[in-house]
Amino acid sequence: MTSPTPSAQQGASQQWVQSGPLALRHTLKGADRTHEKVSGVPDLRIPFPGVWEVSYHALHALAAAGPYLYVHTALFKNGVLIPGSEAQSGVGGVNVTLRVTAGQTLLQTFAAGDVVTLHAYRIGTGDAFIESGGDGRTGVTAHWVSAV
Image (cartoon, rainbow, N blue to C red):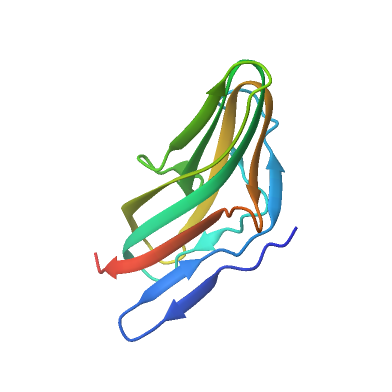
């Protein structure tokens, strides 16, 4: 697994931070509907205050062993869920597998030093993972839009 440090870039009119490219496989082991931080996705530290367009995509890998299995992902700011950042995928049926990339894009106000993290949980029975590699990517980006 590699987890590069998020980078901050500044240009004449663009200011952004991002994770990746990442190589990871995070097994979701927690109880149903219990968020856990996705290891392998580094924290994204906001370098200066303002309104930022935050976007993430997460490769969900599921292998159902019961009637259903879902993977739910979301972004957290300083350890608290960012409402509207949730994405979910799932399958129904025993011995059904799925790999799909899900995510969200939203505007959010941040202070300098705020930390954005990717979290996930599973619902149901089976094996659930967040993955990233050459066949599909997981990542988080933030692009500065305006001052507050």
